[in-house]
Image (cartoon, rainbow, N blue to C red; front, side):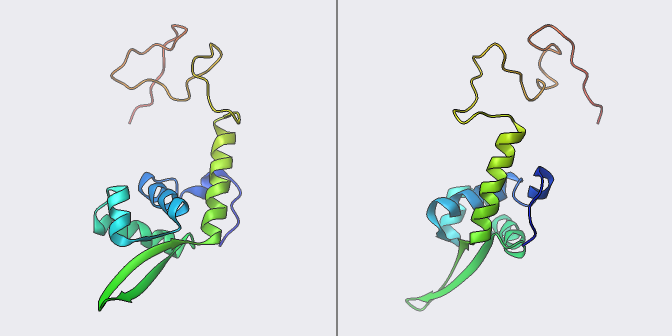
Length: 135
């Protein structure tokens, strides 16, 4: 697996469905296809496509077993997957400037990381107007 050097290098797991898959597998190490579907809320096709990307990137492996004359498919996280997930969390924490105790949004010096939605008022807490990018 390639060495991770910046937040851009985490594009594989930065998508929410893939992050959910990785988090579930870190917590429980191995999960069957159906357990992973239940825990993430993904359909089998959607889950399969995201798992395929994670497998090709070395984050997880597919497990095939035969139990009671039934073919079972599951997934397991790899050591590289655990290592890169931990690096992702560290890099994201550093990028967001989160201190070990977490963010304190009641702190008057806390700056919002994202502007309000386009449906909200176009003012920040100090009364300055936001400039929105045109799409």
